[in-house]
Image 1 (cartoon, rainbow, N blue to C red):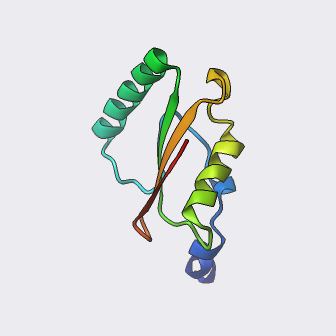
Image 2 (cartoon, rainbow, N blue to C red):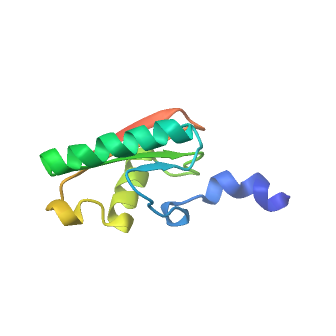
Length: 102
């Protein structure tokens, strides 16, 4: 119980693993919305050779959103199969902030 009280303060990008184009760790999308986004982003990558990732997290802990997004891109190796061409859209639900990393 005490651990849960401090959870938002130590959350870090290491906690999350990529599982496709849509990584909804804050559970904001319905299953149908996730499937539709996955399909759209997959088709976009095939057409434009740019990997677009949509990520939601429940908390950033004490991290700044832009640094958090850049850290996720590095840890996941996003864009490495398409010549380092990646766009990540990260939304943190606790602070209602969004970051777009290119």
